[in-house]
Image 1 (cartoon, helix red, strand yellow):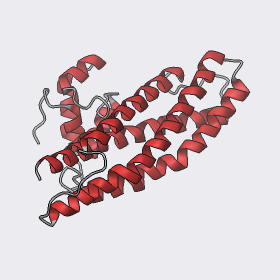
Image 2 (image 1 turned 30 degrees about the horizontal axis):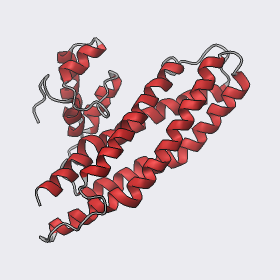
Image 3 (image 1 turned 90 degrees about the horizontal axis):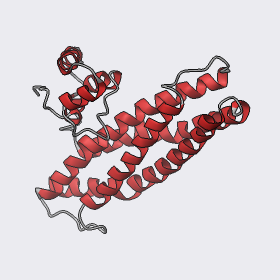
Image 4 (image 1 turned 45 degrees about the vertical axis):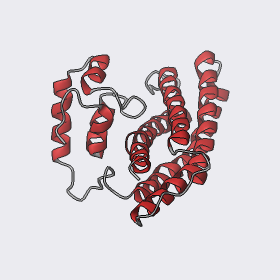
Length: 240
């Protein structure tokens, strides 16, 4: 794929994990705002589109030849990857990070009451929404996509879906992704870009590290669904 400044950042991120990492480094939202062009996204961040494009080209050059191309891999494999890597990560880390958030708010709340107590609320809302979100995907949406792909590969008609078209639940999932993306932005603001204050204890620093890692993982997670899995699932249904 030839990358131009008018190429969407979602399409760029879909080319490889290396490209997504470059966008992440520049703070460019390639998941919830993946339809933005590279030029528009760079201008919004005050960085040169050409410089970012050059960095992406350099990163892609060093990508191992055996890296999985999720734009062509079977959808069932992509779903398995999302569940095993990203859903399981959230199921493990959301409670751990949440415990640290509540501990920090309790111990240090009086030092920055507005930020730390809002951080609790935003984080709890994000965790609750993501847990329900993953359950809906694993119980309803993902199995429907896998059944449709299996039928298409066998040359038969796609099975009827209880929710009509596959685009209906996907629209709901994308809306929830937007909500999660907004929560991540607010968490970054409340933690001042994950910068530890002078009084921060080890638990406070561990909380910030966990939140930063959570943000990075969710960006990739949402990108794989919004920019690759969902468009491919809709195209599969439309073309069969």
